[in-house]
Amino acid sequence: MKLLSYSHHGHETWGAVSGDQVIDLGAHFPQYPGLVDYIASEAYLNAAKDVVGLAPHAKLSEITYLPVIPRSEKIICAVRNYMDHHQEVLAAGMHRELSEEPPIFLRVWRSQCAHLQPIVRPHVSESLDWEGELAVIIGKGGRDIAEKDAFDHVAGYSCYNDGSVREWQFHAKQIASGKNFESTGGFGPWMVTADEIDPKRHLKLEVRLNGETVQSSHTGNMIFSIAKLIQYSSTIFTLSPGDVIATGTPAGVGWSRKPPRFMKAGDVCEVEIESVGTLINPIVDQS
Image (cartoon, rainbow, N blue to C red; front, side, top):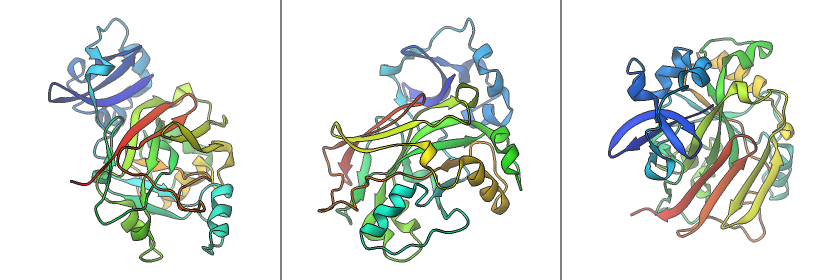
């Protein structure tokens, strides 16, 4: 089942995808004001049954997508979590040792934008870079989650573009300043519930800029697994329903190219993940 957050005629709600249409589950289940409430109740485990017999609300072409979880408590992002990306960082002259534990940073929810909504290049930068990633959405919260139990806490998966403002990322060893400009992180178009994807499956990930493939890999190339990221993060934080873990990006980012290549106004960036969907974002300059 594909679940999403959206607005229609100015009204924010959430629902389920049915073909090229959406079913307004927010209207049918008012006890869950948003998708995160539905996830927190674990009702999403019965999502396929909940939509049976319900009439569609609108066509997907008629809605305005919102980030899948519009206001996540935590957006946890893995750094250099693909070996080929780690190697391209080294080749570009930045010395970074592989760590024994996953390096992570946090995004704020205002740094995100939805499917078909613009990623905004801030006026202080000319180096807005793409980073296609698999996003894991937490269903059941918890602290000190063991790796063997990690997938019991996964509600589903989405696409993520961890848009990076490189000059600001390199101001210091802590990179969060380059990762939190408003509307730089694409998130969507929807969440595919975890029951649809075998945890052992390696999903193809591809990023295209103006139709040209710039990243191509699969999730089996991660250095730290999804289970490890959940275990590690939950040791630090109590994970909450609707928290997001962006699992890192493979090789092919613009910064490491010779010469470097970055996103600019008029570009369109797509992140496609097998069995999940395709996140599409046009690029605009900050007004």
